[in-house]
Length: 211
Image (cartoon, rainbow, N blue to C red; front, side):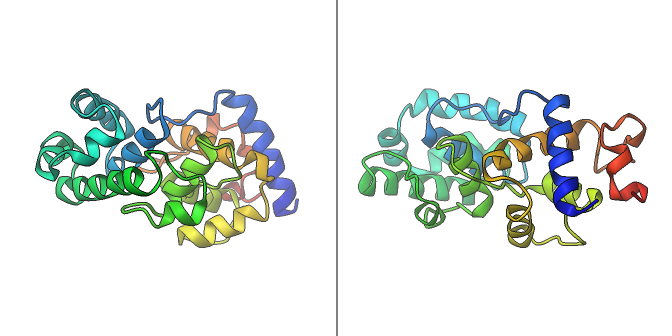
């Protein structure tokens, strides 16, 4: 089985296993996902979803958050960890959206990368989830799983994993595929415990099992 064949089969099986391929960060506007994905660094999505409720209640739009004192933002987002740097990035990011983009999030990958606190993972998430464009989100689940499955060979660098997967994953499947890897990584192919290979839908085609 070639890597391409393995990839397509994995995509097909994960689609069946996890028919809903949604982002686990709650948002109803693009700028809110931008804020949440910054807060999600070294923090659970579940905690971020709780914290942002208070943030948006006080600052309900881009203009309000851009005008907010950084110290006030920090007080609210502190439970997500790294409060000072996250608050600083969020404030700077909202100011750029307000001043340069009319309060809208740009739909250009390179423009997203220029925003404070936005890296390739965040930019890909925005491109895929908000704008429906080809995207590969290489978070820790994705990197761990594609190495175990044999889609990449001992590659840990997120950008290198992304580039390798772009050659294997059909563009229209990338965003949903990465969301399904997150689901599978949390429920079955776990990091902190031994993977539950006995109940994995990929057991017979996973490289970890010598296939």
